[in-house]
Amino acid sequence: MERVAKAASQKAVVIFSKSTCCMCHAIKRLFYEQGVSPLIYELDQDFCNGREMERALLRLGCNPAVPAVFVGGRFVGSANTVMTLHITGALKKMLKDAGALWL
Image: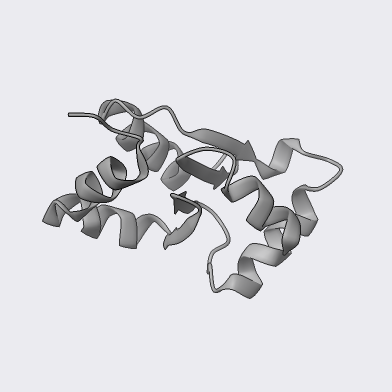
């Protein structure tokens, strides 16, 4: 859990992902199209810590474990939550408040 918290605070937006997950791809693309450059942790490519981080994300309440999005070091949610925030306009405000977006 500590490793996830430390990783989540390294940049304004951090996404825990799997390279083969279509929802992860969609969420990463959403952030890139907003002009945000998130820090991406591909758990399926991190052979040392990936499984441990995935279990920690599940304990945090991420089900499924990926995509898991953190903004400003705080857990925002998975794909459904992020898409809802985007549609309502709340995501843009969160990104501005975290310093990930300047427009």
